[in-house]
Image (tube, rainbow, N blue to C red; front, top):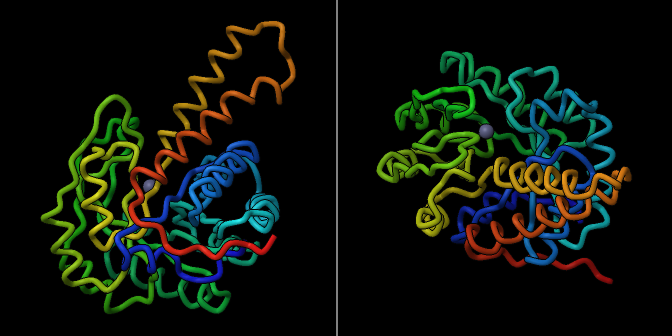
Length: 284
Ligand SMILES: [Zn+2]
């Protein structure tokens, strides 16, 4: 089904969140769609920097959109963390349903000016825009400094741009393995009080389970999940290769890793994303 409205805003207002999953091929994309169908939820397939280097955005959009059309729940195609406006324009033309402009490393004024330019084109094509303020560090790059989102900047950003969603840094960390972090709900609340936009939490794989009901109850409308799926995929594939040296067929080797991705995505949607929005089932 088409991603035909702002499901992230709806989720933010209804004690729920939309899960966005990073995918790297048709196998995990299909697994995520199956998980969303089992859970009867909307879902976002996200293309990150690495994925956009391995295949052109136009190919990703054509592939994932054709898969989304066959799905029984709304499936959106999202460009994750892109700091190049020209590439974002390409994604919009190619048929992505939402894009993230990451100008978080720039001074506020520049981040806002670029976000405005992107919103203008995106909104003409019914494409939603996610922006970022503050910086969510990458654990695997050894980044330890968390630059929290400033509520003052969020207030200005909310007033001066037309961005649909805002990614915030409130204690969350990208690509965490082996440990969890606590969300700073005090900072999140301050941001919510001054900002009209639904908020987005990146690095959800590293968030403690007990924080999810609180995130659902807040104005967070989307969580980004990468590591949980990459991990189950990588670990299962490694085991399959080791246990079955006689198998050369890629699809045979992929069976279990893909099943693991589906189950993990399903559990995340069911256990971490709160109350479902009423999805309209495709007429069979
Ligand atoms: Zn991110």
